[in-house]
Structure formats: structure tokens, C-alpha cells
Amino acid sequence: MPNPARLVKVLATLLASMTIGAIVLMTMGHNPPSAGPFSLWSYECLDPVKEMICSVTSQSRERWSGIEISYSGTRSGNLQQLTSYNGLSDSKDLSYHFCVYNGNGGNDGQIQSTEKWQNQHSAPGSIQWSGSDQAIRICVVADGRNIRPTDCQIKRIDVLVDELCKKFNIKSDSIFYPNDWR
Image 1 (cartoon, helix red, strand yellow):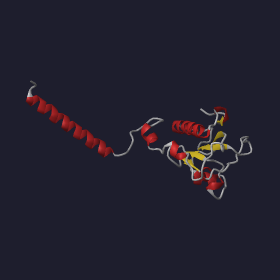
Image 2 (tube, rainbow, N blue to C red):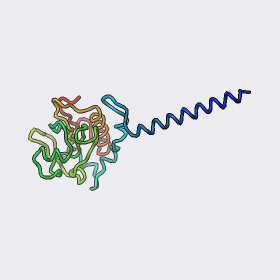
Image 3 (cartoon, helix red, strand yellow):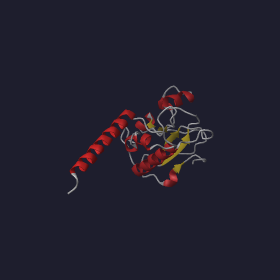
Image 4 (spheres, one colour):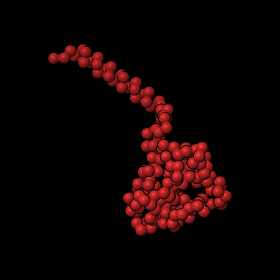
């Protein structure tokens, strides 16, 4: 038979240490620990990609046949800032379906759909764009030279592209990344 006095001491010590640990964690709040380039805590706080690809207008599997990912050409920004950078009056004029933020203008890896996606409209590209009006256009907030995509942006874009390919039966050879991607 185990020593009852020792058992009580061990259980009391365990209870005290668990209480102190819980109090320390509660005082830390929801602040993530300092993280390297990729923090699981910040990644888990982002909206699920499956919710992001839903739209107000009904979606057809035949509507989309490709995906084009391109840089915003800016160091920072969100939909409103990108609208003004491009000299547009309204964010519905942006030629993107999704925008993936880098932490400067929105949370790192945050995906925001545009009005073009919500209404399932085409988003014509720039002069050098050779895609079709059936391409889903994704904007990565980065200039592609000095400001590269963050690890979180890359991971979120990979998940977004995978989900879009599954939902709309898009083949991998119809996905176009910037020349210097990764």
C-alpha cells in the first residue's frame, strides 16, 4: 500500500503547479510567442480557405479553367489601398478575384475575395497577361523584387490553389505563377 501522506503531498504539489501554470497562461492572453517566419498560432487564426472560395452568386464547375497568380507590385496594401495605388475609384474595378496579404495592410496570409469573385465575373489582366477570361486571378501583396512573398502567403496560396482546383476541376498545367515564384 502506498504511503498516504506522500500521495497527498504529490497531489497537492500537482494541483498547485497546474494552477500556477494556468494563471501564467491566462495572463499571457492571446499574444503569440515570438515566432520565426511562420507561426502556427497566426496561421490558425486565419479564415478557412473553403469559406473564402464561396461566393454570393452560384458557381459552376465549367466557369473557371485556369489560375493566374501575380504580384501587386507594392510593398504593402489591402483591397482599398491597392485600388488607390492603381488609380481606380472603386475596389470592384480591381482585376483580381482574391488578394493575399503579407502583414502590411492585412494579416499575414489573410485571403480576401473581391467583388469580381463574389459575383463570378471575369477579371481581365494587364497588357502582358495572356490568360483567358476563365482564369481566376490571385494577387499576392509583394513587389516581387525587394519584397518577396512571406512563408505564410505561399502556404495559403498553395491551399487556395488546391481548393480551387478541386472545386472547379482545374488542371495543374493551367496554373500560372510569377516567373520568380519561390
